Amino acid sequence: QKEVEQDPGPLSVPEGAIVSLNCTYSNSAFQYFMWYRQYSRKGPELLMYTYSSGNKEDGRFTAQVDKSSKYISLFIRDSQPSDSATYLCASSNTDKLIFGTGTRLQVFP
Amino acid sequence: GAVVSQHPSRVICKSGTSVKIECRSLDFQATTMFWYRQFPKQSLMLMATSNEGSKATYEQGVEKDKFLINHASLTLSTLTVTSAHPEDSSFYICSARFSGEQFFGPGTRLTVL
Image (cartoon, rainbow over all chains, first blue to last red; front, side):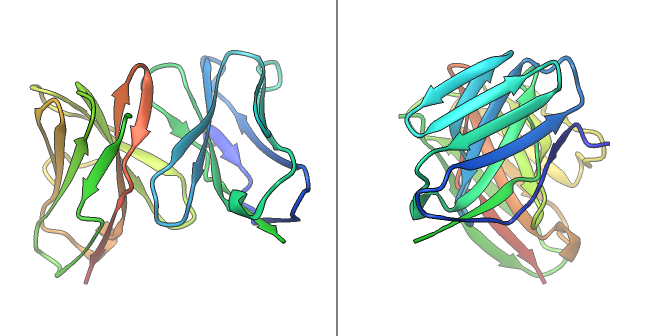
């Protein structure tokens, strides 16, 4: 079993839709949870960072962590074509980041 | 701020040659840098943690004699893929830690013929 599981997609939605991206993890010691966005042939950039359980909102993005079910979510409201990218979840309890495979998102006009 | 660069962005080499990839933190000093490898449609896999002035720490299954890491200064870490083979073809990404966060470089696409 991978430590972080993520549906690779692709996920295709119309502009303006609400997007829900999800990951599960197996290591109960994980305390830090991140979402990265990666455009094609580029390095990942940090979108959201959450410590332990709870919600965090930043503009159109909301990250949720449910430690009881080991479930991580990223919601994107009013999705835009510029949001088209691969979204990677990552978890850690130290410096070492464990990444999911990434979900490829396509937002069409 | 917190910009990380990599050079080259793309390299094609013949089997058996060695390739050096540079990772630089442009506007901050990084005592710790990380090297990842990403195969198509797969997640980033940590290869090694590079510490300035000391030996790198390699993840299980990563050959330290094949992937040489040198972190000679607080702004530069290099990864040398020695005697590269086609199965080493991948996307290599570095990151540098700053204020508790990892900032990633743009990646280097290595193709071994």
